[in-house]
Length: 212
Image (tube, rainbow, N blue to C red; front, side, top):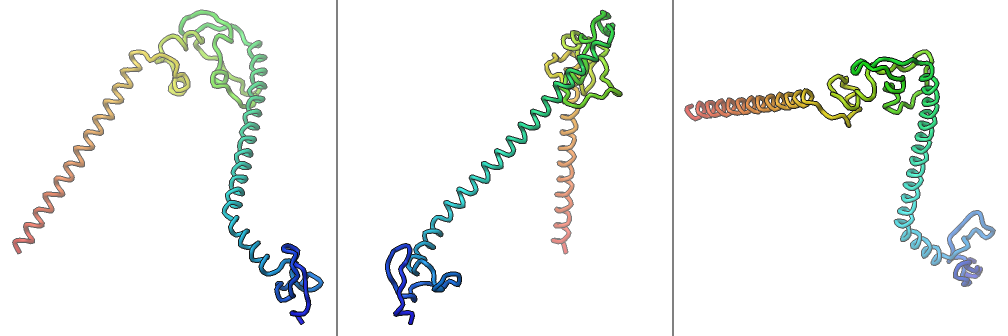
């Protein structure tokens, strides 16, 4: 029966018996539209192109992830810039309400903007808190950026790398380096002594074993 019934392949357009087609339930004749030879050829071609198809898919996924990260970073930067601008506007209004002060170092009376705040120096991107407004520095900007750096706290000095190191600061850093070097040498001597003691103990034990 299968040898007498004929069917045309949709790919190679050859007329072949039904036995040359694989079975398929959702077709009227219960056979595939492609013959067995065309089906195998298509399957081999699909498997041959699988590595290239996988590589393209990986590239698309990687490009999509990079685009997502870039969009997220741009969004965060845009929101940060908007908060920075809003905080700058609030800070400008706060400066208008402050009075002139005397610098703790040069003893000169200057405007509030001449002192500045740490939020302004660090480009603060937080939200303005009316209950906890910023505080002016005790020293003016000219004294902080041109004179000795020893009066600055550790946190402020870390964010002010452009300040020149004075002699006191250099001596303090040099003493710290010397202290670390001395500790390192003492640690090396301690380990060397421990190794020497271990070697002597091993030799004594070996000597006792040989005497037995």
